[in-house]
Amino acid sequence: MKQIYLDNNATTPIHAEVFDEMLPYLKEQFGNPSSVHWAGRAVRGAVEHAREQVAQAINASPAEIVFTACGSEGDNYAIKGTVDALKKKGNHIITTKVEHPGVLEVCTYLEKTGCEVTYLDVDENGMIDLAELEAAITEKTVLISIMWANNETGTLSPIREIGEIAKKHKIRFHSDAVQALGKVPVDVQDGNVDMLVLSGHKIGAPKGVGAIYVRRGTKLTPFMHGGHQERHRRAGTHNVAGIVAMGKACELAVQDLDTKAETLKKLRDKLEAGIVAAVPETLVNGHPTERLPNTLNISFAYIEGESLLLNLDMKNIAASSGSACTSGSLEPSHVLGAMGVPVELAHSSTRFSLGPETTDEDIDFVLQELPPIVQRLRDMSPIYPGQDVKTQCCTGNCCPVE
Image (cartoon, rainbow, N blue to C red; front, top):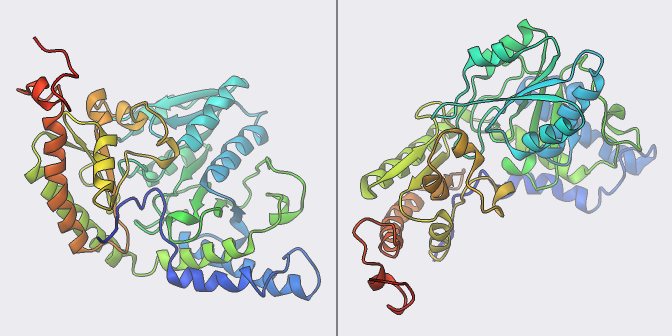
């Protein structure tokens, strides 16, 4: 049976061209780019070429790119580095209630050290109110941190407008764009973004490499020390193979972007329409139009999302219940909670995130298999309207009946 992978927002398979590009740096090109001899020189150029590729993908300068190990590291660097560098100016951060844990948990930590954090509400589509954002700014505000695209629902933030507000008030703007690159245009100049975070494994590179754009002139206090790498901005021996892969993946991510996005959107919309037509009492979570073209987050009344995922997995269909970083939690999604989705529906939410390898046949198979799975789970649910609990138990004796 074919394996169907619809969890690309969690991670992506390594692109064949990316693998070929990085392979020499796992074998014969083994030098440390900090070394002055021939082995170091042989790989130093590859690191700088990758820096150029990343910069070009987001309309930045190569000198503004710092390589990291992942998106969460980039978020930590941007937020903690700003708070420390600007501590004489203020200690107030503005973010939203639907950010990735890589931002929210950093903010929670900083609150314990004396920082003030405003967590903006979102509406039922996951969008902030720009007037509320501007009203939250105080003389002590040093940072606005709002993600480009939500990892669970795909909702796109009004980045340009947020950037204009930040620029108007001379406040730094940081955006986690981990989910956005390769799906929608990402331009740090157009968005007036001062710091932008990327992660390789979301765009066809391996896990363990990322990058952060830091606008020229933006002072940040490094939170990793011990070496001169990355112009003293991020200590640690370069992950050369990963960095080379990151550069190539960024180059490929923005090639024919409009065509790739339209293809993903058509498949996503086909999946969404097919589910809504075949399965009653569903709720699509996220903005109806301002959404990543590959992402569908949908709740199925009267069932548990984890049960649905397990049954889909038995059909070799991979999906998720939200963010991979919180998949071990039994708590309902904080994103859906902030959007006002009832707890029972939040628990039943499933995220399908398509990728370049997704086909029409894949979607057809999901639409064939998913509706009967949902119905079977509902038939076993004691809260499904009209259900006789006793007849749905495994033995007929495991649940109390009148």
